[in-house]
Length: 80
Image (cartoon, rainbow, N blue to C red; front, top):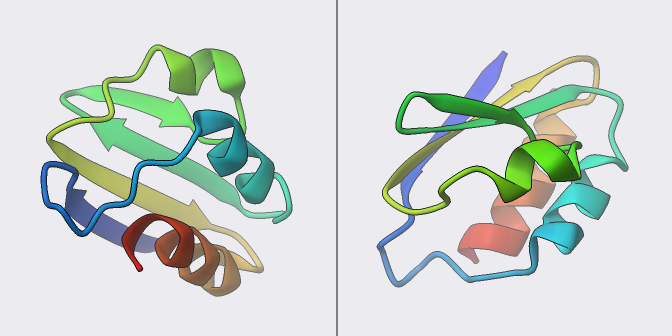
């Protein structure tokens, strides 16, 4: 399992539509979750992500056969 933590209040985090984040996550077979303030959401589920507060500290979890590729792709669209 790979993790990536970020403070979303940092200017380095690029705001993107959650639909783009979900579409990107669904390109991978691995499980992808994000945790924010005691709430965890499956990044592949619109209903879960839309109810998540995406501010403050976020921790992304990647677990599965292509977790490394998924982490790199999510990182590239959010932080670079």
